[in-house]
Image (cartoon, rainbow, N blue to C red; front, side, top):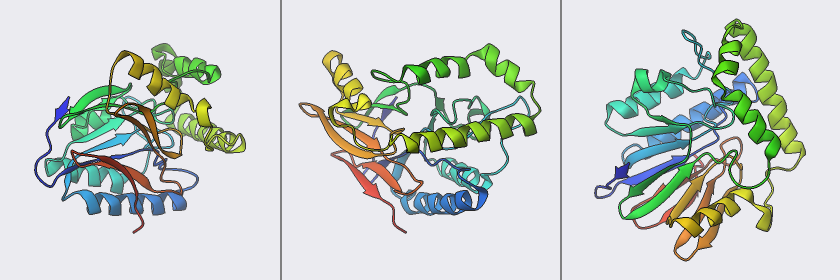
Length: 254
């Protein structure tokens, strides 16, 4: 995938909206803010990358998707109708995106990091879960959650039951992470930073763009190479923007 920027246009990146959490009212307020952000950037957007955990939970049954998010989905549909590419990545909370957004809205959904060129810069982009050293328990769980047989078994549950169970699991997982101070900077033990350094030893990228950490970061990987973490929209409202020359992290405050 290559993107050529036209004059005055930019590419935008955001992750970890966690729509649906922690409750309906709070999520609706966040959804409204995300839509205001999309309204704010659409005139200058060459493309928009939504880099995982857009939903706090998402599971597609054959004929059923989770209730809600209609304003957000309508907004990204409008962006597509205006010719602005919107690209989704799955995260650890919305692993089970399949073909709904691709078929209904022509939005590509990536389940793994991708490489691409924007202008003359090389990017590696993904959510970030399961990458780098450590976190072996999650890596095992991810293998189970992404197993087609296990997903098929889950689909036998009635959607009301399956979605309720998954939402309870999602909420407890988020609370557990907060209790472990997972959103604090770990210095040289930042495992996504280490992952970027390992990749850079084999292949050069100008920018490594990830989410998942809930922590806005701008860290040097090597000569002319940077790792950016996009942060989250539960409390920080941070996003990335690339204008063809430089990448910056910004905060949406409207």
